Image (tube, rainbow, N blue to C red):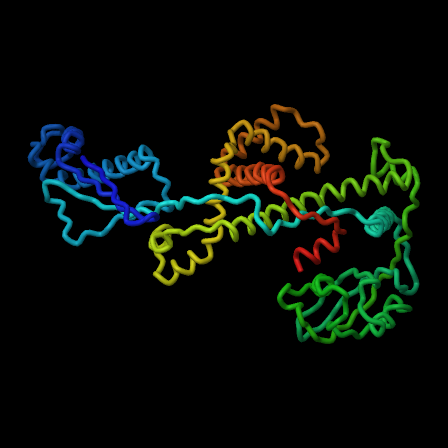
Length: 440
């Protein structure tokens, strides 16, 4: 057997595999002998079938199977030994004059080669790194939310701007008939507000859905309509009021603090706000880190220039999935996935050049940390190590879950690397300004 490679250009190559009878004949003979021992052919005892008959009946199909096995094994071994960095999988070239009755066979495979390039971690235009802080306004609002959450529900005779109203929204033509509880403070506009303030149990309010709530998603919940249907919905509805309540905020005292923090770590309003600020900014940091990683990814893709074997990859995409794609479908799929492929190559280059590795022990520890945080949310603060090991083992046996956790851990490692090796423009913002600025 002989394997040769010819470079078409820097990104494309053709591998030729020549196979002769001596390369596969011994294996074919062994399989035929095994067939002979087990073949059931009328007129012959088991194991006594003439080899000529076995060969005539099975010889060609066995030969084709063995040649294909040898071809795949040899090609894979060659790619590894030659350390060829390829994209996609080798594509066999169709040969119109191919003949399985020939004395020797020649197979050709097209290869898409990964490009060579350098990654610049010091681009002229720096990436923005956000530091999200919890503002005094946010802390005050969260304290109010806590007081409301732990407050007393009082029944009221008439609705005020602070009231909660339970009632049934109806529009027979639109098949709306939904009992809901809404907050008067979510109602939009003075005209609508006037209809609610002073209303009593048993009153029927005639309303229009358009501009009824400050947030259309509140309207969706109140009416029980689909997400798509609620946008721009402009129909009349009636609301029959069944209950009016108002929340008396909980006192900011030791009783409330102990409910929130059983360990006694909070005993004053100042300490409560400090705790809220600490917890909020931890969550903000996660969002800021994700945004930073996204921005770095965009920056690296935009500023790392290299060509790809696009024609080869589009041809490969036609046969790579379960469903065969047309030329046009493969081109569209390539366009959608090209950016991701570019970052995948950049990421691989950075990890290789900087010896960033991930071993199984790290993945297990990461999985256990993820499990520990999940269990803490359900009140299990001190799970046993064996329990964590068992759960982590089961999760990592699931290939999809293992790949998901691996991708998350690699992202963490890369973000830490970027923070150490790249310089950024920095900006301190409130959470509201972060959302406006980043997500527009």
